[in-house]
Image (cartoon, rainbow, N blue to C red; front, side, top):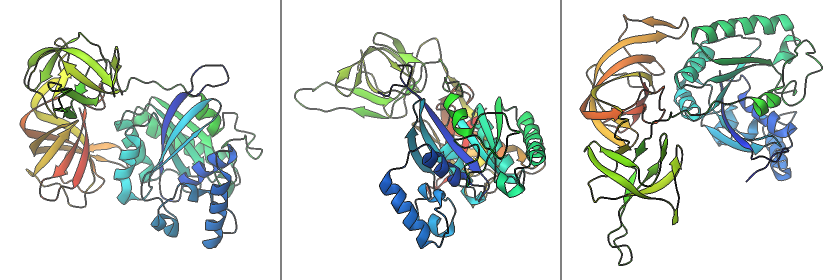
Amino acid sequence: MKINNNGSQKSLLRFTTAGSVDDGKSTLIGRLLYDSKSIFEDQMEHLEQSSRRLGKEETDLSLLTDGLRAEREQGITIDVAYRYFATPERKFIIADTPGHIQYTRNMVTGASTADLAVILIDARKGVLEQTIRHSFIASLLGIRHIVFCINKMDLVDFSEPVFKDIRNDLARVADKLEIEDPHYIPISAKKGDNVVEPSGNMEWYKGKTFLRFIETVEIKKSRNGVSPRFPVQTVIRPQSSEHHDYRGYAGRVAGGTFRPGDEIVVLPSMLRSSIKSINVYEKYVNEASSGDSVTITLGDQIEAGRGSLFVPPGNMPVNSHEINIMACWFNEIPLRPNGRYIVRNYSCEANCIIKSVNYKMDINTLEKDFTDSSLTMNDIAHITLTTSKPLFFDPYKENHITGSLILVDETTSETVAAGMIT
């Protein structure tokens, strides 16, 4: 357990970085780790060696997160790189996501569990299409807190008017997307201005440094609501002489709280039972809340398996063959009208048909296009699915687990889209 200066347990902040390629996401994280003394000596030596090998005159802090060889050679981020560090105030998990348009799917992956999104903008270029796309995806994923870092201020002479113009453009985007809590910080990740320490070059900026902001921002939790939901991942049956009749249902609580004695309904069978016990490994616990990985045993020997969902009798999810989603299309192969796909919703799976493309988002204007029903890589659209069997789900805004899904091409087994149920 980590304890901060006032004696309480440290909170954990998960944040993702995004932005167009070369906007300095990896450099910002490298500078953050370096200036906050979160880099080990051997890591620093390796970083300096890598920088010299690549012909860099200065130590390239971006190499701390660009771990793949292809990334280091090209100077870009391809995969999602996760980094962990802590300050006396808080613990952090960072997801550094790619800027190239063909890797937008990785941004969705990195942002899906984030409490806060950090979107970088090159001060010389201003707001680009990828800036708007990443902002839109962050808002779709329900990330309430977004901080826009206007980077490379050293290359525009630390100009306050340049910062204000970009901030005003971003504010219009944030207003259109109804982003709940936007913030704007002028920085130079390469030089360190306003990353950990206040910048002497931008005394006109009176706000917090980036580190101070992420240390103090109050994160609204309860991403998965209060409705108790337990998707079964697997059934545990040791079939040993010691545990001959044992049948446990393992998974992660997707919302609310479960306790021994609670009455539950098993979906889709609609059979009823009660919780006999809740285990974490071999330890019995009195309750399990959202995010806890546990094994639940029931008071009755009823049929349940992977894909089943435990819910309270008086708090049922939506049950339907028809599902409306906001979909982010990942695949190079376009959507096939009336095409057949596999839909995976938590641990449940069914076949489905794309019934209709209701509208597509114009990323540049953030307007709905009702005339274009084609869907290609990186397009975002509102579509309707018809499933082979009724699914039980919640709207994404109420539960990020039971309200999200992925589409899989049944011929290639490739994930073609991620969707948020509306």
